[in-house]
Length: 356
Image (tube, rainbow, N blue to C red; front, side, top):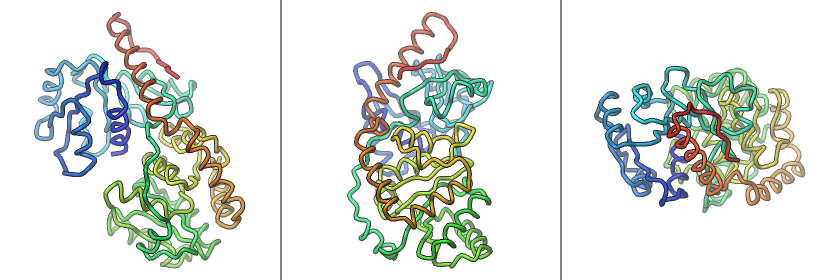
């Protein structure tokens, strides 16, 4: 899940003198490097993969947890029922949208763009405002674009667009725009992830309807995260999804040094790409509608000077922006946690907290 990267940053940069981190795992170990890293970076890992929600809540309560943080929201494998049983006095979600009234969640993590003040009324939770929506350091990518393209049989001359989001985020109108981009640029490719054979078959059938050549769409198999991040380097421009922004995928894109084109939506979940670009100071990649989105994508593919200017802006911003400053993010988050604990000790209801 996306929030595994966020959780990893918190574990790595936390103040170990003030905070003890206990991880309650709802799934069994998959033996991956990510799992091993989590296991080694927390103070205690408790396996709850074989117990029901009630027993899980009892176990959590038995550990005298002060603050329980939800990383899964309503995603597959989650158990939001645990939070309705209130096993901890303070409960926070890192879901990209409200968990709703009756969920048992007191606070939600956001930034001033993803949850502006006039959107607060749509959330049952109080908002904890952090510097950026994500806590991610700059990835140490040891990858060469030409070598990666050769590995995946992609020509160095092709202009490569990509979207590595889950298929449920790809709506028909957006996919039609992607096809228009490919038609306008015969030397371009669109790279997607192969989440299932049915997904690939359906999208290829749809592409044919738009007169797109079969070899202009490339599907890549899912691979371990580090390998996936490395192959991001062969992409020229990443195309964000509209209904729900790519979160980890958007961050991976910007870490790789490639531009991310997005649309600023009207909900938290579709404002994340724009939030990251605002943090980098590259708002020219934020479109207001699909027409602008399409023309911007095409212009970067056709105008080499404009494309290189954006690349240079992004390269400078990655080193100077707070977007990839994990320590700054964790310091602000920990200050917010201390504020929430103080409110609870005083017997006061949760309130909006900002530690910017």
